[in-house]
Length: 308
Image (cartoon, rainbow, N blue to C red; front, side):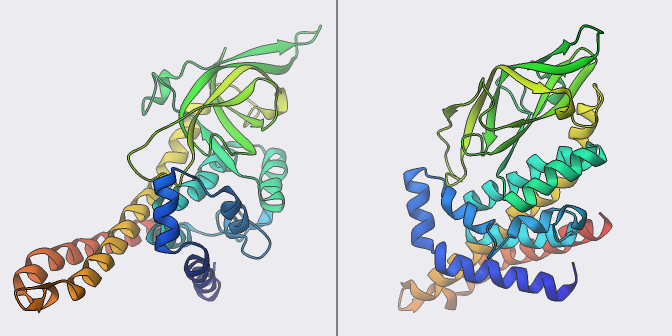
């Protein structure tokens, strides 16, 4: 995106945060362990359309590059990591289609995500296969016609720790086919697809995280991402190679927000007759080292974004 467009998007996020995601609201969401689904949908609505940053212009998006995605992710993380995670997962769930889909699949699914503001979930991790993607046990059995042509697949398995798992309209699911791991697009409401247990987390609770259960889920052959079996692991590696930038942006955004809170506290907290901010031991011993680390992180992340 051009700089003017990016600046306008960032201003929109800040204004929305001030109105809809005050610190009190974010703390309340976290305490109640509640994902603000209606708010996420408003962020994707016609007035904001923030999900369009992550989508190419050919699909009706804004065609944001790596730097644009980093800045949007960081801006959201400075407001609330839970909401940022829920929103980021929409992009993550779309990415298997973006990196591996056929032209028809990209036009169909990414066009719908843009125009219908579909919430997407990335269904890869499992109870016994977390970061070891190659150990996934979810199966996709072929269905064939009388001539032996593959017409569809029946998917069985359980996914774990799925962001947006209980609220998604669309899922990209990794499953093991006869020729290897493959991604499938599965729509909400498909018989046999259901959210499982809601995860109880230590933080980032405004993000919906659940199991996703697939019990005899039937999808047509055209929902096989890329149109061929066995390329899912390669597609997953391509996705992770890009989305780690967003995770780094989350860490930076959360760190900046924490620093601002610490500085505000240091200005108000009076100890031994003066505010903490006036004490060199506090500023140079605590604040300055973290400020330096955050600035170094920002420079490093922006260098990586530029290279991507």
